[in-house]
Amino acid sequence: GSFIGSAMSSNPDKEASGSSSSSDGVENLQVEPIRLPTLEEVRGQDIWNNCAVRSVVSGVMGGGLGLFMGLFLGSLDNPIMQDEMTGRQQFIYTAKQMGRRSWSSCKTFAVMGLIFSAAECTVEKARAKHDMTNTVVAGCVTGGALSAKGRFCGPKAACAGCAGFAAFSVLIEKFLGTHD
Image (cartoon, rainbow, N blue to C red; front, top):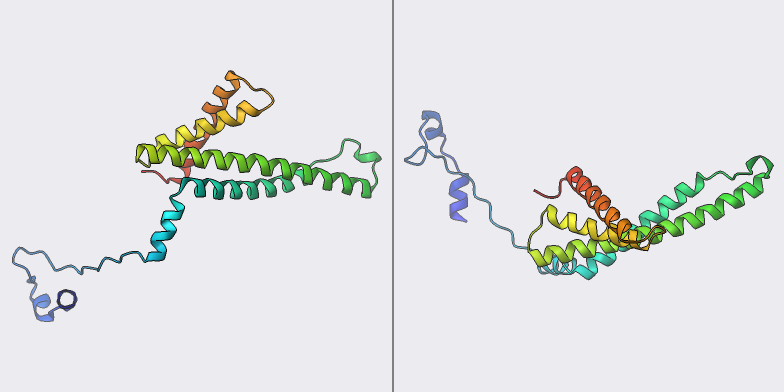
Protein backbone atom coordinates (compact mmCIF):
# COMPACT_ATOMS: atom_id res chain seq x y z
CA GLY A 1 0.00 0.00 0.00
CA SER A 2 2.73 2.50 0.93
CA PHE A 3 4.77 1.90 -2.26
CA ILE A 4 1.75 2.44 -4.49
CA GLY A 5 0.73 5.46 -2.45
CA SER A 6 4.21 6.98 -2.77
CA ALA A 7 4.30 6.22 -6.51
CA MET A 8 0.94 7.92 -6.98
CA SER A 9 1.77 11.00 -4.96
CA SER A 10 3.76 13.64 -6.76
CA ASN A 11 5.75 16.55 -5.46
CA PRO A 12 4.72 19.73 -7.27
CA ASP A 13 7.94 21.52 -6.27
CA LYS A 14 10.11 18.91 -8.01
CA GLU A 15 7.88 18.94 -11.10
CA ALA A 16 8.05 22.70 -11.32
CA SER A 17 11.84 22.73 -11.10
CA GLY A 18 12.13 20.04 -13.78
CA SER A 19 14.07 17.55 -11.65
CA SER A 20 12.95 13.97 -11.32
CA SER A 21 12.58 11.88 -8.19
CA SER A 22 15.25 9.35 -9.20
CA SER A 23 18.93 9.95 -9.75
CA ASP A 24 19.10 8.63 -13.34
CA GLY A 25 16.25 10.75 -14.72
CA VAL A 26 13.59 8.00 -14.88
CA GLU A 27 10.25 8.96 -13.38
CA ASN A 28 8.40 6.68 -10.96
CA LEU A 29 5.68 4.80 -12.81
CA GLN A 30 2.49 3.66 -11.20
CA VAL A 31 2.54 -0.09 -10.67
CA GLU A 32 -0.81 -1.80 -10.85
CA PRO A 33 -1.32 -4.91 -8.75
CA ILE A 34 -1.75 -8.23 -10.55
CA ARG A 35 -5.29 -9.57 -10.33
CA LEU A 36 -5.41 -13.32 -9.91
CA PRO A 37 -8.35 -15.14 -11.52
CA THR A 38 -11.15 -16.27 -9.26
CA LEU A 39 -11.86 -19.96 -8.71
CA GLU A 40 -14.90 -19.75 -11.00
CA GLU A 41 -12.80 -18.22 -13.79
CA VAL A 42 -10.18 -20.97 -13.45
CA ARG A 43 -12.85 -23.68 -13.55
CA GLY A 44 -14.52 -22.08 -16.56
CA GLN A 45 -11.19 -21.92 -18.39
CA ASP A 46 -10.46 -25.55 -17.53
CA ILE A 47 -13.84 -26.62 -18.90
CA TRP A 48 -13.35 -24.63 -22.12
CA ASN A 49 -9.84 -26.10 -22.59
CA ASN A 50 -11.37 -29.59 -22.78
CA CYS A 51 -11.35 -30.62 -26.46
CA ALA A 52 -14.61 -32.60 -26.16
CA VAL A 53 -16.48 -29.64 -24.67
CA ARG A 54 -15.05 -27.23 -27.23
CA SER A 55 -15.95 -29.58 -30.09
CA VAL A 56 -19.53 -30.17 -28.94
CA VAL A 57 -20.12 -26.43 -28.43
CA SER A 58 -18.69 -25.71 -31.89
CA GLY A 59 -20.90 -28.42 -33.38
CA VAL A 60 -24.02 -26.99 -31.74
CA MET A 61 -23.16 -23.45 -32.82
CA GLY A 62 -22.40 -24.66 -36.36
CA GLY A 63 -25.74 -26.47 -36.42
CA GLY A 64 -27.53 -23.29 -35.38
CA LEU A 65 -25.78 -21.30 -38.08
CA GLY A 66 -26.63 -23.97 -40.66
CA LEU A 67 -30.27 -23.97 -39.57
CA PHE A 68 -30.64 -20.24 -40.15
CA MET A 69 -28.70 -20.34 -43.42
CA GLY A 70 -30.91 -23.18 -44.65
CA LEU A 71 -34.06 -21.29 -43.73
CA PHE A 72 -32.83 -18.23 -45.59
CA LEU A 73 -31.60 -20.08 -48.68
CA GLY A 74 -34.67 -22.35 -48.74
CA SER A 75 -36.93 -19.32 -48.83
CA LEU A 76 -35.17 -18.12 -51.98
CA ASP A 77 -35.96 -21.30 -53.97
CA ASN A 78 -38.54 -20.71 -56.68
CA PRO A 79 -40.59 -23.60 -57.95
CA ILE A 80 -40.02 -24.56 -61.59
CA MET A 81 -43.75 -24.56 -62.33
CA GLN A 82 -44.34 -21.26 -60.54
CA ASP A 83 -46.74 -19.89 -63.17
CA GLU A 84 -49.05 -22.91 -62.88
CA MET A 85 -49.10 -23.03 -59.04
CA THR A 86 -51.57 -21.26 -56.79
CA GLY A 87 -50.35 -19.05 -53.98
CA ARG A 88 -51.09 -21.80 -51.44
CA GLN A 89 -49.12 -24.39 -53.43
CA GLN A 90 -46.17 -22.00 -53.72
CA PHE A 91 -46.30 -21.36 -49.96
CA ILE A 92 -46.34 -25.10 -49.18
CA TYR A 93 -43.50 -25.75 -51.64
CA THR A 94 -41.39 -22.96 -50.13
CA ALA A 95 -42.05 -24.15 -46.56
CA LYS A 96 -40.99 -27.70 -47.47
CA GLN A 97 -37.86 -26.42 -49.21
CA MET A 98 -36.98 -24.30 -46.17
CA GLY A 99 -37.38 -27.33 -43.92
CA ARG A 100 -35.26 -29.60 -46.14
CA ARG A 101 -32.55 -27.01 -46.66
CA SER A 102 -32.38 -25.97 -43.01
CA TRP A 103 -32.07 -29.56 -41.74
CA SER A 104 -29.46 -30.43 -44.35
CA SER A 105 -27.42 -27.27 -43.64
CA CYS A 106 -27.81 -27.80 -39.90
CA LYS A 107 -26.27 -31.29 -40.11
CA THR A 108 -23.46 -30.20 -42.44
CA PHE A 109 -22.42 -27.18 -40.40
CA ALA A 110 -22.68 -29.11 -37.12
CA VAL A 111 -20.36 -31.85 -38.43
CA MET A 112 -18.03 -29.24 -39.91
CA GLY A 113 -17.78 -27.32 -36.64
CA LEU A 114 -17.30 -30.46 -34.59
CA ILE A 115 -14.57 -31.94 -36.80
CA PHE A 116 -12.68 -28.66 -37.24
CA SER A 117 -12.75 -27.79 -33.55
CA ALA A 118 -11.78 -31.30 -32.46
CA ALA A 119 -8.89 -31.44 -34.93
CA GLU A 120 -7.61 -27.97 -34.09
CA CYS A 121 -7.83 -28.56 -30.33
CA THR A 122 -6.13 -31.96 -30.57
CA VAL A 123 -3.28 -30.64 -32.72
CA GLU A 124 -2.89 -27.61 -30.45
CA LYS A 125 -2.65 -29.82 -27.35
CA ALA A 126 -0.21 -32.23 -29.04
CA ARG A 127 2.07 -29.45 -30.31
CA ALA A 128 1.61 -27.16 -27.26
CA LYS A 129 1.47 -24.20 -29.65
CA HIS A 130 -1.28 -21.87 -30.82
CA ASP A 131 -0.35 -20.96 -34.38
CA MET A 132 -1.40 -21.15 -38.02
CA THR A 133 -0.19 -24.76 -38.43
CA ASN A 134 -3.05 -25.94 -36.21
CA THR A 135 -5.52 -24.16 -38.47
CA VAL A 136 -4.03 -25.66 -41.63
CA VAL A 137 -4.11 -29.20 -40.22
CA ALA A 138 -7.65 -28.80 -38.86
CA GLY A 139 -8.84 -27.38 -42.20
CA CYS A 140 -7.24 -30.25 -44.07
CA VAL A 141 -8.79 -32.87 -41.78
CA THR A 142 -12.21 -31.22 -41.99
CA GLY A 143 -12.15 -30.75 -45.77
CA GLY A 144 -10.90 -34.29 -46.32
CA ALA A 145 -13.52 -35.80 -44.02
CA LEU A 146 -16.41 -33.85 -45.55
CA SER A 147 -15.25 -34.62 -49.10
CA ALA A 148 -14.79 -38.31 -48.36
CA LYS A 149 -18.47 -38.58 -47.39
CA GLY A 150 -19.82 -36.56 -50.31
CA ARG A 151 -21.24 -37.52 -53.66
CA PHE A 152 -17.86 -37.44 -55.43
CA CYS A 153 -15.92 -39.41 -52.83
CA GLY A 154 -12.47 -40.92 -53.15
CA PRO A 155 -8.83 -39.98 -52.64
CA LYS A 156 -8.89 -37.18 -55.23
CA ALA A 157 -11.94 -35.59 -53.65
CA ALA A 158 -10.44 -35.94 -50.16
CA CYS A 159 -7.19 -34.28 -51.29
CA ALA A 160 -9.06 -31.46 -53.03
CA GLY A 161 -11.28 -30.97 -49.97
CA CYS A 162 -8.23 -30.99 -47.71
CA ALA A 163 -6.42 -28.34 -49.76
CA GLY A 164 -9.50 -26.19 -50.29
CA PHE A 165 -10.70 -26.17 -46.71
CA ALA A 166 -7.16 -25.63 -45.38
CA ALA A 167 -6.73 -22.59 -47.66
CA PHE A 168 -10.17 -21.27 -46.67
CA SER A 169 -9.34 -21.74 -42.97
CA VAL A 170 -6.07 -19.82 -43.36
CA LEU A 171 -7.90 -16.95 -45.10
CA ILE A 172 -10.47 -16.79 -42.31
CA GLU A 173 -7.75 -16.84 -39.64
CA LYS A 174 -5.82 -14.09 -41.44
CA PHE A 175 -9.01 -12.02 -41.74
CA LEU A 176 -9.94 -12.49 -38.06
CA GLY A 177 -6.32 -12.16 -36.90
CA THR A 178 -6.45 -14.61 -33.99
CA HIS A 179 -2.85 -15.82 -34.44
CA ASP A 180 0.33 -13.78 -34.12
